[in-house]
Structure formats: structure tokens, C-alpha cells
Image (cartoon, rainbow, N blue to C red):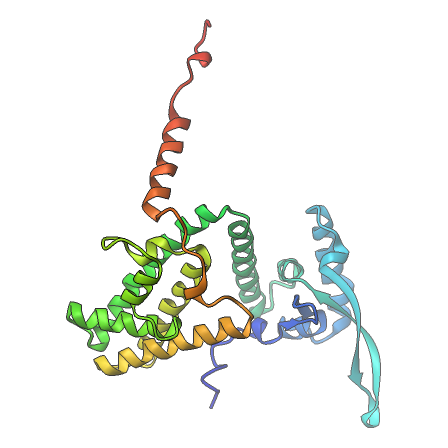
Length: 289
């Protein structure tokens, strides 16, 4: 019977590795086996060169995505011998599955997997380059969606009344913020009575809360948790786990992150004004001037 933690892991995720510098990579030999190639020579002589050519034609440096390496494989009588391999980037894997034998059933799965994952990475890179104010606006919109989904999962678990949901939310905050409830966080940020704490969070703080909400939602649904107390404890423990991860990564605890000077509403108004200015026709653009 498969392990519940690994039953739904993609075979392509299962062979993903991380080097000493934290960079992900895949072994070409391992990828060839998953794609259904019985002979490495066929993959190495035909598929890899085609993928490398596609990489070059896309304007990318082949060496950045196909790094030649050597790995030890078993030989006769327990001995080992060196054999050639490639350390592949995610993009290299994408190109390889695009150029692999389409008759092999798992190739289509690989094409979908790496296309989706490559696009996710592109979006992540684009988001990382955005100014802080724009990242705050995006994460705040995402937070609203995840909170709505979490509220639905909590309701299914038996958290019905508004006061019960407020208590449920407090348990998530207490786990993530080291015991602080929503009102405590509000006071710590020195906000006015009508201000919402989510509107005065940095993009980093919002991202931590998105992760808390998403993982609690998933756990409530996956484990069919029922009862207000059980739901509250689930939210608290997920918040604790997110906090533990931040600590292990050497990050700043969410309660210690700086509070932005401008609210989300102020940023939205400023953005709307910029859009309106861009839409205004210029007198100097009129014909016949």
C-alpha cells in the first residue's frame, strides 16, 4: 500500500534533486527511464541533441541547462564504473519531453508537467521583480480568495456562527504569530479601530498568511476534520508549522516585520489614478497641431 505522503507525488518530482548551492536539477539518465527509454544510447544520441538545438535556437546557453556530469553505476561483481550523464534544469527537461518519442504514454504527462511548472517559475520570477507595493496588491487579492476558501472549509467542519469563525481565525494567527490573536496584532501594528490587519501587511507577511490559510483549508478537507475544537486546533497547528519553517529558514517572525505606512486601499487609489492619467488624451497628440 503506498505511503500517504508519496502516493500523489509526480514521478518527475520524485527524481528532482537539489545541489549544494540550492539549485534544482534532474538526472538525464533517470529522466530517460521515466520517459520509457530502455536504452540510454537512444535518448543520448537523438533526443538530447534535438533538445539542445532547441535550447540554442531559443537564445539560451546550452551549458546553463545541460551540464555534463559523471555518475557511478553498478558493474559486474559489485564493482562500480563511471558513466556520462547530464544535470538538467527544469527548462532542459521541458525541451527534452517536447522532443521525446510521442508514442511513449508518459511523454504526454511529462510535457504537461514541465510546461505547467516552467510557467509557474516564470510567473514567480516576474512577481519577484515587481515593486513591493504591487506585490502587496497581488498578495492581498490572493489572501481574500484563500480566506474565502478557508471559510467554506471551516463551515463544512462545523464552524458556523460568526463568533466561532472569529475564534477559528484567532487560532491560526496564534499559531503563526507566537500566541498573538488578531486584536493583539492589530494593537501591535498601532492601527485605527476600523483598519484591518491584512491591509497593513508587507508582501512577505501576506505570503506567510496565504500559506497558512491554504494549508489549513487543504488539511480540513483532506482529513475530513469535523467539530469546532478540532478545526481550531488544526488551524493553530498549521500556523505553528509555518512559523517553524520561517524560523528554520532564518526568516523574520511575522509579528516583527515592519508595518507598511500605506494601506491597501491607499495603494489601490493611487493605482487607479495612474491608470486614469494614462487614459487621458494629450492635447499635443491632436492632429494638425
